[in-house]
Length: 335
Ligand code: NAI
Image (cartoon, rainbow, N blue to C red; front, side, top):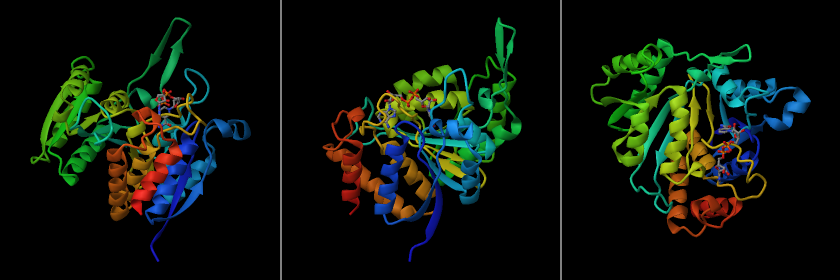
């Protein structure tokens, strides 16, 4: 009898339930024995519980230590703080890992992107410390600490080492924010000295944006504070076929929450056409995290086949397959 895992499943808002259902089916078809503890969060529970993030969600994650999460809608400029940010802060999920990779069969201007964005996930302007100054101004405070910078730097270099990657690039704006980004950069530079086998460089975030568009193949592991990581992740998605393609993991000391980079996509929710690939790939990252490497490889190989054949691509990738048709094709290839 194979090992059984208890994993929290948060279907989320918008396309969340559709894409997480797809990932659950694929994991099941790969033969991994998961007892999913399904907990609702987001818009649909606000009325009942007065919060989009009720305690039962936090308790479930705390107990199981691992979660697969669909996207959750955050109202803009008013109402509740982001559930996503709250979760990352609550469990100190300090590393947000987002592999950006080209797949044969997915149209993009590039054919050889293979980089990982490692985004600091708990501080920077996302610490949520902001206030109004009368009606005429508002202030958001950008916090960068040595401790968090050191942790994310070590994480990035360890990831490079474990995955056989050659270079870590620190992305920052230390020329302008000399104290905050200066501290981040100096800390990453210090940490880099313990990893002599890995090349280290730093690039200012605006220049990085240009270079990523011009020569993404030159980059391997990118480590950066929260805000730049958020922005460059979506840009990275644009390099390899869009938001439907890029997975992610929020990783802490002993708790991890896996989710795609994309949001709840209200424009296509409920239509059955969302691309589940990013969430399936996030669940593959999760399988590797729990040590189910064989199942992860199998799913990766099945996905590569489906993409290369190209007959069951979803609408965002230029095809006409539904969420279900794509998922069923991946499952067919698994068998
Ligand atoms: P979004 O990522 O939801 O959508 C941007 C565009 O990409 C839309 O046109 C959408 O249809 C398309 N898209 C996204 N995922 C797709 C998929 N799997 N398949 C096909 N097309 C896809 O970004 P948006 O509209 O800015 O955010 C919507 C909501 O999601 C907001 O409330 C935002 O705060 C929230 N959000 C939540 C995240 C999370 O839970 N981790 C992450 C990002 C946004």
